[in-house]
Length: 348
Image (tube, rainbow, N blue to C red; front, side, top):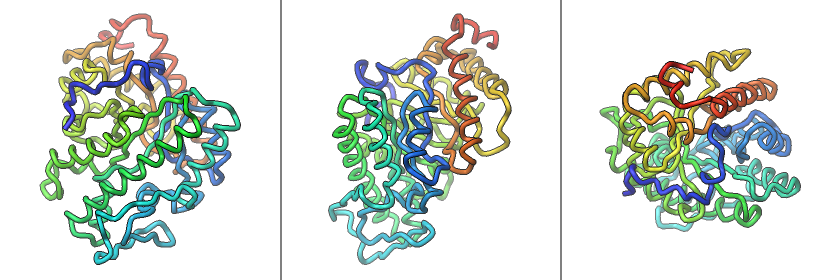
């Protein structure tokens, strides 16, 4: 298992070419056609983000997209999954059919990116992680051990295929792959089916599939046990900008000191959307100040930061998604324009 103290982010790779405070999306967008979604991503995020489009088709929901090619798992009409336990086979090859409806947003992004000539621009893509997929399979009726073995095999195959296809289309674009693990928020519950070290190993082995070709990260849009996620060895940790992270300031500091970056979910995307970015900026700044008071390096907090909404934007109208991105851009400017890191101590 990779140590959380040595993310080994390549200086000449993705993180080496990204400005502090750069903006990116979490994954889903509200658009119903792929071309519009791809152009939205290229226009509104500093880092080009491959979109999922669950409002276009339930096949692009987070878990539904991930079951493509998994033997014994089928997709229902409305994005639900069904498991044939007798047919599940963790040793069966997984064929990632990028022509399927599940990857329409991915294909549209590649088409638009190629047409717009963005090769060389950093690209971020996201897929469900093996823990969340494994839990989803158990809830659909699969035995626990079998569910996680199938999930691991499936996500690893998809990660390899998506990384290769992106590299073939955009060979000069550094990639950031992020595993989306919303269900890891329950990791420390007494009835969670995996111990934390096993969950970390599942993440680590999945990231290892592409780590020689892409920077790797983990995302959870809820408060989670961040030390356990860091045990998996991500180079980027994507988390909501909430005060709970202050309780693990020591882990945050070691992660940043080892070269890791944090993608801060600075804009709430599950409630009323503010007219300006002021409230969100002050909330983020307050968290940074508290982390500094607990010993975090103020310069690293700013210099190794990315900014995103807290979750995907599929639940909003495109116009609201645009407002969220505009506010995110305002926060990004403030991060970059801070006169000195010491201002964090007093509250910027």
